Image 1: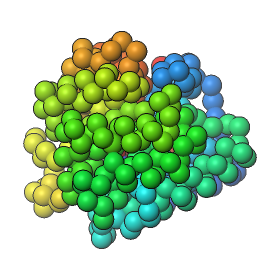
Image 2: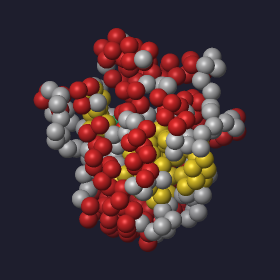
Image 3: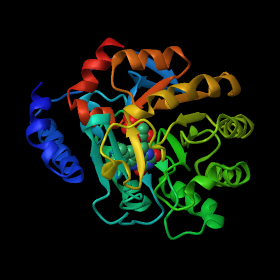
Image 4: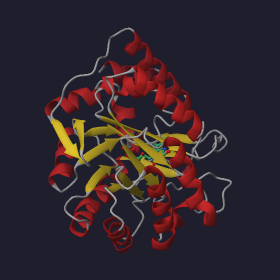
Length: 331
Ligand SMILES: Cc1cc2nc3c(=O)[nH]c(=O)nc-3n(C[C@H](O)[C@H](O)[C@H](O)COP(=O)(O)O)c2cc1C
């Protein structure tokens, strides 16, 4: 309620990226003042790890791992940091994030703005030494913009090498629409070489997943699933933002912004992918479902149809900081 008023009065009038920064500062202050504290939820086990509730923060919200204890205190059982690239990069020019309230959606073309793998490694290593109240931490790896597609495997491996031992699980992100050509890396042979290169760095035992785009056909998604089985990965994350703009209510001037669409319009496709992947993936593989989650009922339905865990980004932006705990309590 308070968040809804604040959202309508202040956040809606602020540009979305500044609103994000304002949100981050608010969360930090709440945490520092001791007004938000971790709670215990039902234990969920996946990839040999124990999760405090099934709901996690999706990649992209905390790209540089600056808010991990705070997000845990808000009720997220896992936090996926990144996408991180080998070297720091500024991302695309602003504005690069757009709100579509009529569709309860966002469009972003951030372009992997982040401080680079070395800075993230330093952050995480300090955090692991200083804090014992941490969520499961996932590290989402991406390709640097300046690196050619045929050198992608080396580029992912460079980041993986710096970050080995610091993540509870790792993700190969080949599905963001905002790095030119990135999504071509979902094709089997390109993906195989990236997976092998990353596994060589982090070790075969470290949980590793692949995050796919919702725009893949079922056939293409199944090819990725086969590779996940073959190379002994831990599972898949479905899905990233979409380049589709079907069935939206917002003004054409907004809809036509370039970038990835997230939020409510992703719900159908993200849900559809769960049984498709579940049928192909070996029984021990984990599916993390993300895209368009807004309610407890939606989370239950994803878990019932075969997801092991779920993540949210856009739904959290619209529902506010007290939503994760409210939801996790009941799951
Ligand atoms: C502003 C923004 C930035 C994002 N950045 C990343 C990213 O860096 N890496 C990534 O794998 N996904 C990124 N995502 C995608 C989310 O992790 C998630 O897959 C997608 O938004 C669907 O979930 P949602 O409907 O709950 O937002 C981003 C999403 C948004 C809205």
